[in-house]
Structures are given as C-alpha cells and as structure tokens.
Image (cartoon, rainbow, N blue to C red):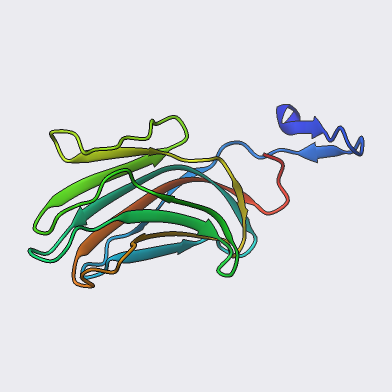
Length: 155
C-alpha cells in the first residue's frame, strides 16, 4: 500500500494512487453501424486499445468509419480511419496510442489508427460509427480496453 502513496506536487498532500485496472468494454449487438460506450458514474477511463470488426452488407457506397470522443455535447477528439470499406466485406480496425495511421487495409483486411491519450471523466463517450450511415443493418462489434479508475484517483 505504501508504494501507492504519492505526494501531489501542487498541494503537498499525500494521495492514494490506484494501480492499473485494465478492463474490457464491449458491444457486439448485430445490425448496428454505430456504437457508443459511456464512462460510468464515479469512474474515469484512459482508452488503451480499441478494436472493431465491421461487416458491411453487400451493395451501397463505401463506408468510412470514425471515432469521436466527447461528452455528448462537446467534441474532444474526432478522427476518421485512413481508408473506406466497400459493401460485402469484413474488415478489422485497430486503434491505440502506439499504432501508426494506416492509409489502406492490409492483405488480411486490417487497418490501424493512432489514438491520442485522454483521461475521460464520467459521462464522456467513445463513439464509433459509419460517417455517412450507409446501411444501418451493417454489423459492428466494438471492444475497448480501458484503464478504469475511481473518479479522483491519481493516474
């Protein structure tokens, strides 16, 4: 426990610092081309890794997937993946702070994006969606790995 006590340099107060608490959040309900995960009350998140499996229905225009981080009203961070997905395909999308920004899918149908690190307070959201809402019956599986802490815990 003593190793988790740190001194707040601004105030001189001793503060308990929680250890890392990585947890997975997921939404794998089918027939959705948009997903939102919300930071629960009393918690903060640092998004570590995001993965999307996107199955587009045949036909229609290309899908452009994007990530938005915000508080439901104000947008903190938006970013589009570097390539679009045609209809009738299954693709896998990955995002983390240590990944590069790919501008095309690889031969296995994967694309990567670099995320900016943000501490997200309760009520903030991570939204992943098809920018043009091409087909609401597309299937999206979203999984997040977050470092979830109690609100007020020093990161």
